[in-house]
Image (cartoon, rainbow over all chains, first blue to last red; front, top):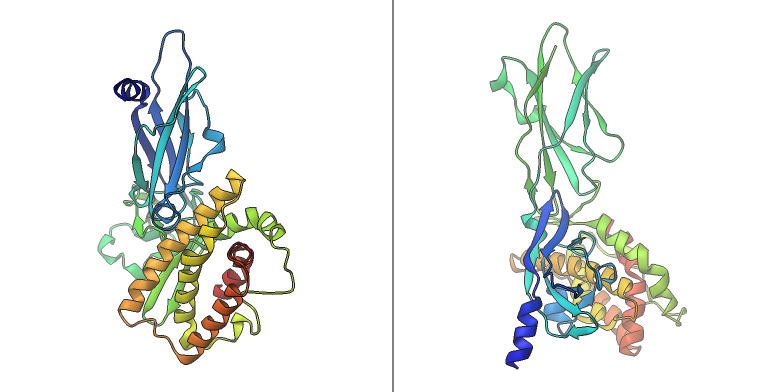
Length: 204
Length: 152
């Protein structure tokens, strides 16, 4: 078993991590490089459902089977707010190690959220804001006020924008000769978390 | 909202990624329904549709149904197709997450069960147990849109 263990450990991928930003998750690792040999990896996953209700069933990811490269978009498979478990199988040339190498778990509620990019502009008497499309899971909170009246920013002035119809949102009818300021934050209901507010933008 | 649905049952409020669940189901619906040869029976709709449920009973019926799918359905729907299995896993784990939230409401007595919801769920279980496990599970999974439509 010692030789087998050495064989197993020897091929273990290094630096496994999931880079998760704005609900998009990329699995990355550093493959082992062996002179004159080819190491290919396959990844399988299970969620808490498979772990607790489905006899530990491991689900292969067809696009991530016997691959040379060392990253993979795993967003579609990790689409519930539970823990997911991943493991790697390694193939050295024609030999397959059937042992799992590395046990790694992840929950999407740890994703990092960035504040939205936005532009705001005047159109006639209207103050409009155009928001970045961050995907269907996102809502936004937009706050706006007359410059110099920061303390008068009340929640009523701000509102959760539901990005369904268009990326341009009408805020309100503005009064000429005043400078207005706007800032925005993104919010994901599925994980009940929001980003920090963006930089404030002011415009006359 | 775009991606999420908030289920309001009085004080019980449960957020549900409806877009993700529907997208997952739509991707495999034809495949799953093709595996269900018994077209004359329904698990969720026989003899009465879910749409005739009192609002006071909605939370309890929803809680029962999520428990039903997590405990009795998904685990019997393993297929030879890895893509279908991945989509079922995505739906099953979303249901597990929602089942837990509904369970919390139930523990706070925010999801009480009346006579009607208990009777209606017994009927659904009877429909399920009237078939062999795999057929019943596949049919139930194939009827997921009936549940999603009712919830929306």
